[in-house]
Length: 201
Image (cartoon, rainbow, N blue to C red):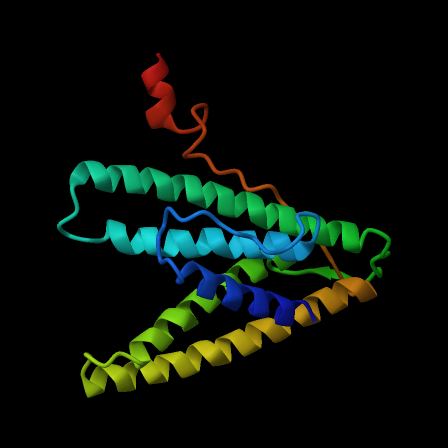
C-alpha cells in the first residue's frame, strides 16, 4: 500500500532532519533518483525544512531584514513543494495510463499527490506533538492536552492513509479517474502579480 510506504519514508526523513535540526543542512536522500521513494523523501524534506522556517520567522524578536529573507525562502519553498506534488501526480498518471475509466467513473476532490502532501504534513504534526507530550519542563495540563491532540492526529493519519489507498485502488479499477491541474500560482509571476508588473511600467 502506498500510504504505508509514504508514512515509513516521511517518519524516517523527519528523524534524519532532526539529527542536525538545521534548516541549512544538505539533504542526504538514501533512495535512487529514479524511484518514487526518492521523490517522497525529497518532498518531506522540503516540508520539514519549511516547518522549521515557519517557526523561526514567528520569533517576535526577529530582525526585520532576516524576517524578510526567511519569508522569501518560505515563498520559494512553497513553489518547490507545489512542483513536487505535480511530479508525484505525474508518477501516478504514468502508473495508471493504461487503465480505461468506466463510464460511471468519477473524479476525486483532490489528486493522489495532494492527499500525500497532507500525509507528509501530518507526519510533521505527529512528530512535533509527540515532542510536546514528552517534554519534562511542561505542565501536566499541557501534557494532557497534547496527548489528546496526538491521539487525534494519529487517528487522522489512519483515516487519510486508508482514503489514499482506496483512491488509488479505485483509479486502478477504473472507478475513479485522475485529472491533474497545474497550479497557477500568481504571486511569484511578474506578469500576474500586480505589485510586480506595476513596477515595470
